[in-house]
Figure 1 (cartoon, one colour):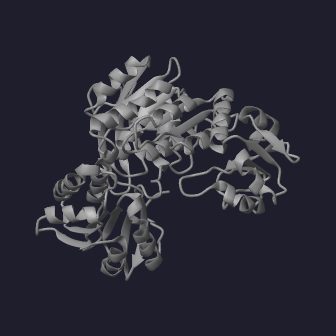
Figure 2 (cartoon, rainbow, N blue to C red; figure 1 turned 90 degrees about the vertical axis):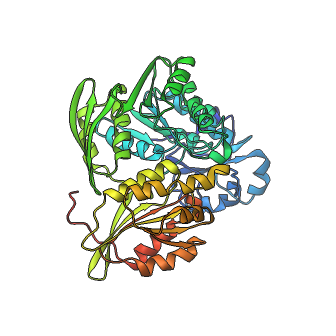
Figure 3 (tube, rainbow, N blue to C red; figure 1 turned 60 degrees about the horizontal axis):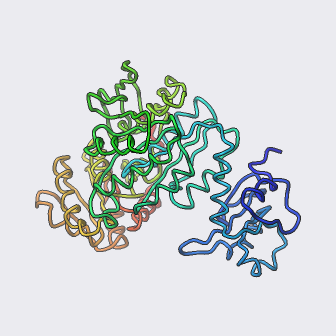
Length: 477
């Protein structure tokens, strides 16, 4: 049997004590009692809203072969007969296991942060590196104080490439996580207005993102966005903490990994990428200039970690958008179709602009319309009204004539749009959803975008529930 961890090793590195007769080892780690599989260990982490200890019995019923619990909660576990490892603090123990995982690993490690594009770039790296070896990367957006150690602890010993996403809402969040990950390559996708409610300026956001350099391994590298106005600041920060090799990507003439040219439509892109002085034509199976720009960072990272660059570039042709981040659905409506672009996972001004550009590049069928369905961008703080108003500019420049809005902050955009744009505004997602369902028409291209907390996923679900998903026979797979 190939164990992810032997129980003996877990007890040792987590400084725990076994209770009962533990299995020889575990096949995986879970913190979700609902999705745990037989043979895995359940870590009863106490979160902001729920305490994993309250769900230990469900985890056991679903097949957990071992549970990790805190000493303080042990009396409440009295009815359970499953083997346990008892520790001082479950999250801290998971962190120790994560550090042991990094210590034993011979993999090339890449860490990704940035205001926009972290998850997309992480998934892109997972996809293109798979052509060169065994890849381990986080599921979903496991990029916080529990997601990063969980992803590290789950990394098999024989992994060849590890890809980690590191996020933050406040200063000093990236620092401890990157010191755990210890990447050979650190990527900052871009710096933009996100989580501004927790910062006084974008410059403070740049400084917080720059914490990622502090964990880069000796001899390691940083990859920075040369097109971003904070490039010089980030380059200086990287140098200050001893990062020896600093590379750049983007359209800038001096970028090391340069997007020389771009052609795209609503389904895919063709780029001309200049790497190591040679320009190659690369097809990307996912649309959007922002995707193409992040592809340059991903290809650059492949070069630095010794992956097969030709195979990585070829793999981009099979790339598909991540759920909630540009994923497209073709839905049957009446005697025709509508195209649904799902951007419902998150939103800030930079990602809103990218999504609007994606909608502008899409071609409606027959007499169809381009419709932007937009919800509030959260965590914008005192800048919120201004940043929502400013979305009028990109919408008008893109020629979007139908804008449907929901959320209290989007009232500012409603008021900023001229009469030439057909605007529909509702106070809440629940108010807007029925209007969307009855108002879409055959041929329309509909783009849905908001911060996750606004719940625009409900609009996506309602559209798919009301109009069947139809395979797009025009696209190659």
